[in-house]
Amino acid sequence: MTSSADELALLDAVAQADLVRRREVTPAELVDAAIERADAHNPTLNAIVTPMYERAAARLADVRDDAPFPGVPMVLKDLVAEVEGVRFTEGSRFLANNVSTYTSELVHRFERAGLAIIGKSATCEFGMSPSCEAALFGPTRNPWDLDRSTSGSSGGSAAAVAAGIVPIGHANDLGGSIRYPASACGLFGLKPTRARNPMGPDAGEGWGGASVGHAVTRSVRDSAALLDVTAGPDVGDPYWAPPPAGPFLDEVSRPPGTLRIALATASWNGAPVDPECAAAATDAGRLCESLGHHVEEARPDFDRDALGQATRIIIGANVRAALDAGAKARGRALEAADVERVTWDYAGLGGAHTAADYARSMGVVHRTGRAVARFFTRYDIILSPTMCRPPFPLGVLDMSNPNADAYLAAVLASIGFTALFNASGNPAMSVPLAWSRSGLPLGVQFAGPFGGEALLFRLAGQLEAAQPWASRRPANLPG
Image (tube, rainbow, N blue to C red; front, side, top):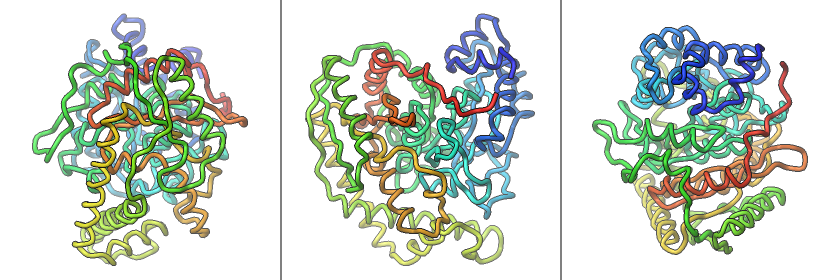
């Protein structure tokens, strides 16, 4: 790679945008450098599955230098967010030749802000696994250890950002799919409050309100600045998050005050926690205490077994509905060979339950949300590991793994701390504060009150200043 491409790879999106505004680089030079880095690293990582280089270059003529992100390159996860005329597979062989007929509102907001989408990033089939090992495209590799998973389902975006291909990777989060790829790849990943970002024009919510979109980034300020240009309701949204008091970017440099932090190192779902992951959270608690916050062990009280069963029913119902719609559009019945094992199992689960089961399951989710909300009347932040384990070896979380028990155990270890906040709708972030003895990233999760992204950004900015992570880069890449 050229030295200029290497130099730009060290900069976050805000810094790259500043270079354009100062006329030190052009938007085209930013995009060309990202493409050069993609050509160098993507054959190893398999992070980008549908290049969009020509489209990105063509759109630069309409980008204003005073846009928030003029020509700053990004990747778009191949799930939920669509681009008219571009292949949209959702990681499934069943949709291998599907092409979008419209552009999602979130994508319009990215591009109005000047961002240049250079490609679609890898995901697992329908976003249903905490890894990116889809049969359609093959495994995505973790830049920190090429034999390890990036986690998922936003692992393609995480690999692209961790490798310095782009500073921003679009991501979405159903049970932790922003936070655990951030944890596995040494990045910052914030899951916003439910309905903070739009899902239109075709959907009002995802999977009972559990799903929300945003990004993985290297810096806190990139995440905040991006949320400033995407947040807010779209026409026809059924509901939306409480509006912020001001720009999220301004919050990053503001002190958070003295916070009441609840520390939890035992997973919500009972999955065993690796000692290094627990130690990462405990050390983060000590760091918070050194910054003047009050930290004590505490956890919200809710029925974890009821929530787990409700979540399975809701996912099964949504998978069955999606596959039925796809089969109808193609004019033939769906067969097990069309999808991966886990997808087929969930479709069967969806067909085995009734509409009343679904309604009861949503009741469980809402009761859980109220329990979490009551907990946040006593605490400002819940601190925990992001994942119960360091990144898994490739193959364990393959959705067609014949060892179903090993697959399920790995899923529970991935979602053990994250999925609760998809049920409750609270914002939560994974912060790259720790690395294992073998050099693998270990994220630490901080969850905040509903609508409380501003508080999380203040705390994240303080943590980033106290224990910076930007200089840590993976060394397992060619070039």
